[in-house]
Amino acid sequence: MQSKIRESLGVSKKSSPSISNNKENAPPPVASSEAPVTAPPSSSQKTSTTASNFVSPTRQLLHESTMAVDSIVQKLKKTYTMSGMGAELKETIGNLIIESRGLRDFLHQKLILFKGIDMTMWKNDSVDQLVEKLAQYLQDNLILEEQIKKYKKELKLTKDVIPNLGADVQERIKREIGGIASDMGAVKALRNKK
Image (tube, rainbow, N blue to C red):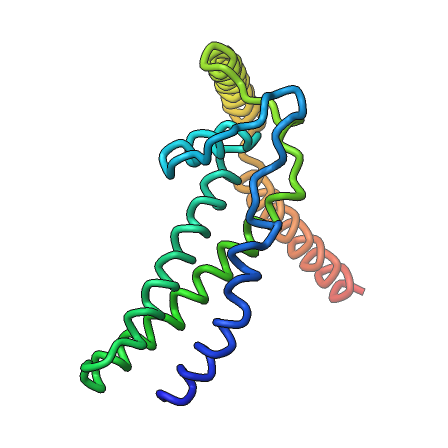
């Protein structure tokens, strides 16, 4: 287990600069009309400028989450290499590193995926528009309920008008069979007379 973690630490030491310097995680470039910043911004200033550069708040959140998890991975790697830790603690930290990397990679993939979605074309309905749509749907629903009531009344009237054919048919069949039987009896009587 420890050798696996050491291997992944060695690989991650080589690949971690590429992840932290990766252009996929970088915010979109600032328009050239803005004046360049002469002093390096503090971490709180970086967050505010980064927030203003993103068109989509979801993409901004994904970017910030990826960066936060990346910093957690870096701190866990430093903690893992400290001396004087027990084997269990070292193994737990190693597992945390592996899981954190998985989370970081997942967030990074979603960030790249979301980069291809054009948020400028999305329409965000206002509350008034949503209320209007809801009122229209309610009106349509009431109209449909009235039509359903009307059709139920028509169905009931139709059922009342149409007689119960089942009972009449049974009686008619009995009469016809009785008639046939009596006719057969008459035919038999005629034959016997001859």
